[in-house]
Length: 347
Image 1 (tube, rainbow, N blue to C red):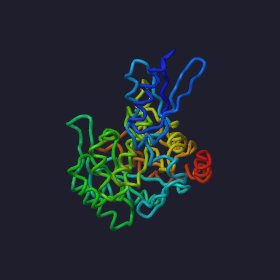
Image 2: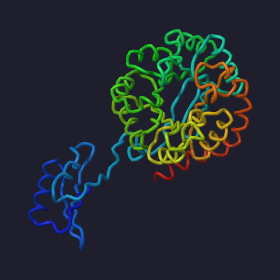
Image 3: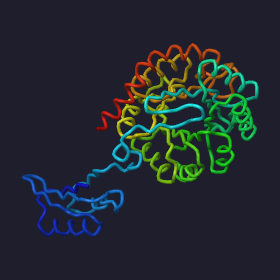
Image 4: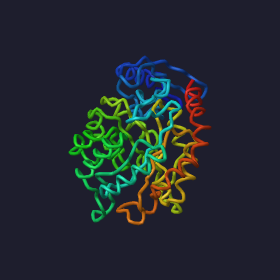
């Protein structure tokens, strides 16, 4: 860390701060400039107590961290792209993966039809909400355990991987018994207690960025998972809340590029939620691929007009083969190049 003094500190002031630096476990190196005096505190910022509390001292102007707080998720810790096995598919390191399925599981026939349509498109990892977080308490909340049972049926019958959301610590064991990937939704991105408990479930975790979460906070949430034993973390950009109302959320493609540069974790994009309209999903998916995403998670329903949730943004599942055909040339062009570029930029 770098401790910057206010102008014209006395020798006694500098000695006092240097003593505090030693007390916190660092080695102080005083650098006197023409206009500024700073102390470079040498030591592991993760292992030792943070020096940021020293900003409370009258003579200190600011304290600047040098190391990234998301140590285990960073490329400084692990340079190469992490490749994960998700059901029958791989994700990351040039392996592009599309996950698709209905927002909510509503019936056996609805789920089976969606899965069969996705398989025709070459998609072998299925998303589907058994437990649904809804803004209104009167909206459809999902089928719960019955929905998980239907996911288990299609997993056994079709050999697909399963991604579904965990809303509460009460449901972790139930969901982990079926799902290959436990999804943490935007509302729970910084629910650290839930993250700690989900990390111990022995499953990969898909961590969606919160709608008002900064990129560094998102990556620190991933660090919570890794620190508590879940090394198979997938980052998911799903749009953030801005002043814009033309779309449901604003897809932050810059977050994908930054996360790919700063971390070794796979980064995927949910183009459905920021779009808010099915007609916008394909353009946003193209943007995600072009900026370097390792995959997509797309909402697809056999009959969106009858969907119990997010009807406007769900693609008719029968159209998924055409949707994937439109993306495939860009995937072929960008996925291997993006994998190499991310590792090269880190060097």
